[in-house]
Length: 226
Image (cartoon, rainbow, N blue to C red; front, side, top):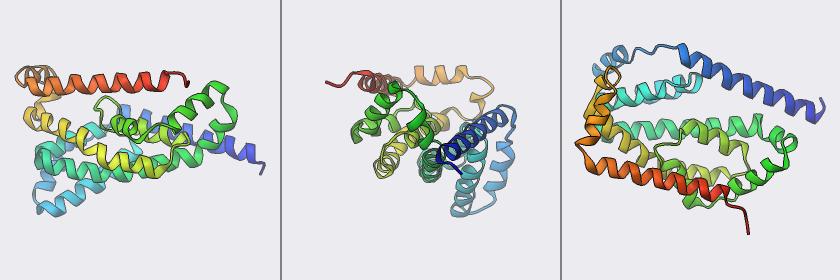
């Protein structure tokens, strides 16, 4: 098979797989309460292992289920243990999605897209570890988007993996701490988050600080090279 044809087919498979996962995730119902009640019956290490395994398998095939797992983990294990379990699962997912994008999509986008993409590819590929770490640690950047985007660029996986290992716990603990404080009722009444932040000024300031970091990263990527 001609190399260009192979790259086109692989990229088409990649796009279809992402689209299907997105569509299924929009209509998929995950009964986290039943799963959580089942996990309570096991010792902490076993329930943690099952949680990590379910997290990896379900969030791989179905997007938009990650938030339910984060809430379930916060309620079941508290902010510290749930952060550890989610970090393990997200590290595995980062490896899988990074190489999924690298194998199925990198060849296509490198050859087919415009010069503008190549400039962006060079900027992202040459981004320092510090900025990559901030991207991973910022709570406003979806992990799946980062995994796939970095896989499509020329960024080295070792650098990205280190950012994943060091940056994921920061974002995760921040979110898990909030979810553990609010509980399951956040889905029934999202305004509880506003009340929770209003009563926790430190968390609010911490969130604003993260937003500033994200804006700084965006300007870093947009700034033309001198």
